Image 1 (tube, rainbow, N blue to C red):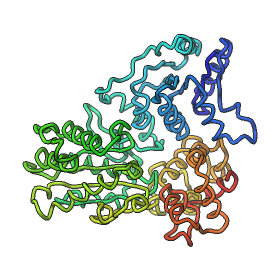
Image 2 (spheres, one colour; image 1 turned 30 degrees about the vertical axis):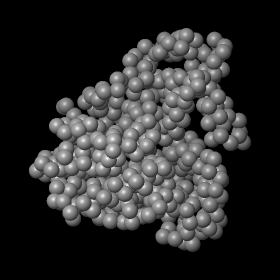
Image 3 (cartoon, rainbow, N blue to C red; image 1 turned 135 degrees about the vertical axis):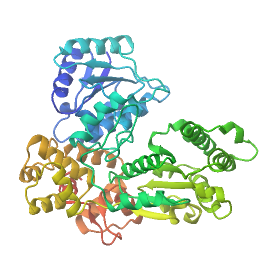
Image 4 (cartoon, rainbow, N blue to C red; image 1 turned 90 degrees about the vertical axis):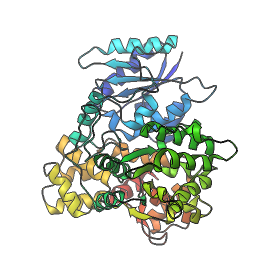
Length: 516
């Protein structure tokens, strides 16, 4: 008997297929867990994680609805980590539920290479259930091949993903650089341009900066504020101006490439070589006696800058992932060194750097003066204001009927871009009024339930942060400076100092008062 965990979203036909699989596999003496089995009063976050960790098989249902789910992402992320552990017998079985487009970038990073099963609309559930049963009992792979390591995204699949998400206003929890809002990209015959993108002050500032030579731009903002969208808009602008540009999201670098400073810089050199198709190769510049900092610097100089006719832009997104690495100080000192070299060598003025982060770097970096975070042009992303929300409401067909309704949504969400987009999408799709949206806002099955449960998951096992959040809820203050900065970076609280801090928005305050 094997134990199976089913990850899915509570929507049709996903829920129906999940229930069918539970019954079908159960009839063949396999133990199947659905989240509906969690009893009232159980700490469901701990129980979900415990069930995944104790399973042999992780079955994930991938549909147009589930690819929008933050909780499905959390479950997939944990499953992906478990499947890569030595000595752990753990298999991921993806099932496409009527959706054959490209997976969002973050989900694809975990699932694209895994073989999968496909259920087509109107088909009997039994065929796909039998494929899953065979995989569980024989450990054979599912029938449809996943991608190879070198296989790129294809235009038709990206079109399908775009149509399922940004084209209809459905926000992804994490930005996808291939279908970024408000940018026209070309991948084969692919041209995408979101009808829902609202340009903010930061858009204008960063485009102005990237047109210059020798600029360093630091983009800061909590999660889901649009940092990735901003960086990929820079990439599209550079391409339009016939400039060279490489976008690198540190979230999706394999752990093996983060084992040391040298492996990371070798990976970066290979990535730049591939993107820019350089004639100088990394091995031409790598000298084991010089050290990785000098090697990557020499490679960038020789391969990219010395003969550059237009600015070369390197965009580093989600650099927070490096803050807890033992080589973080050396990495960021190297980036700072490239900034400083502009004064000594003219070719380094051909390099533009854009670095995006959420977490306060000085919590981690020993000497902030030996990093890029206190130099260059700084852009801090802000929440939507009344004017911007009004524009977005218009783009959605005015589900908010009055200025007062717009103010009510601003108060509920704090203007947080993802929450605002999710609210407007829900109002249009499900014909919600602002009153019904507010009434159901904190319900687990409500419009924000998936997002709110994900917050509890992120707080799981972080007792100190949870205690500090309770203090903010009770007293509007936080005794621990590092906790205050981490909670603010996570987008849960706001305020300039820990003595004047409050919850980010009414939605978070109402929900966390009930669950913390």
